[in-house]
Length: 290
Image (cartoon, rainbow, N blue to C red; front, side):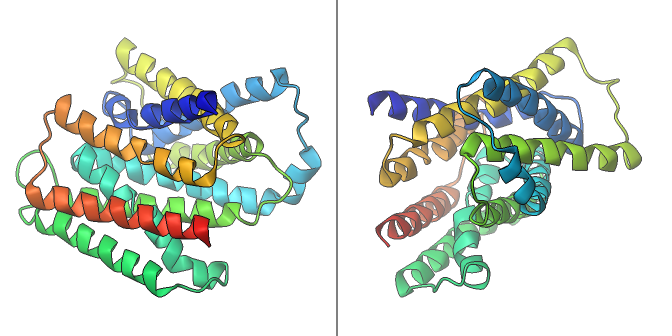
C-alpha cells in the first residue's frame, strides 16, 4: 500500500511540473503535443513489450472508434492546456483546467444517463463562483505579458476536452489503463501530425539543445514514466485515496508558479482556487460513496 501511494504521489508531482518544461520548449502547442504523444507512445510500447501482461489487440480493435475520438480529445486537451500556459500564469491555467470534473458532472446526465443530485449541483455552483473570482480578479486581462482572459478560456477548453476523455473512457471495455493510454497517445499523434504538417508546419529553427532536452523529458518522464507510475499504483489503492492524491498535481503547479516563476496570486484568486478544488474534491468524494 505504501509503495502504491508513493508511486501515485510521484506521478502527481511529475504532472504538476509540466508547465515548467512546456514553457521552455520553443515550439507551438500543436507541435509539442505531437512530439509528446510520439515520445510517450514509444516509451509505453517498450513497457508493454517488456512486461509480462498480454496485450489484447482484439479488444483494441473493438474499441477503435472510441479510442480514436478519445485520442483526438487527448490531443486537443494538450494543445489548449499548453496555450493556456502561454497566456496566463501557471496557477490560473491549472485552476481553470481543474474544472474538468465539474464539466464531467454537467455532461454525465446526457452522456451516461446519470442524475445530478442536489449536492453535486451545489458543487457545480461553487466551482462556477470560484471561476468568477479568478476571472473577476483579472479584469485588466491584457496588461503586461499576459492575456489572462484568453489563458482562462484556453484552460477551460482543455478542461472540456479532458472531461470528454474521462466520459469516453467509461465506454472502453477489455483494456487496461496502460493499453488504453498508449492507444490514445498513438492515435492522438497520428491525427495531430497531418493537421500540424498542413497548417503551420514543423519549425525547429528556434529549438536549442536545452529545448530538445525539455521536449524529450516531457515525453519520457511526464508522459511515459508518469503514466506507468500512475496506472501501476491504482491496483492497490482505494478510490478515496486516489481522489485525495490527485490534488497533489494542481497544488504542486500552484506552488511552482509562485516559488519558481514568481507568479503571485491575489486573495480573490486564492479564494477562487479553494472553491474550485474544494468543490471538485467534494463532487468526486460523492461519486466514490455513490
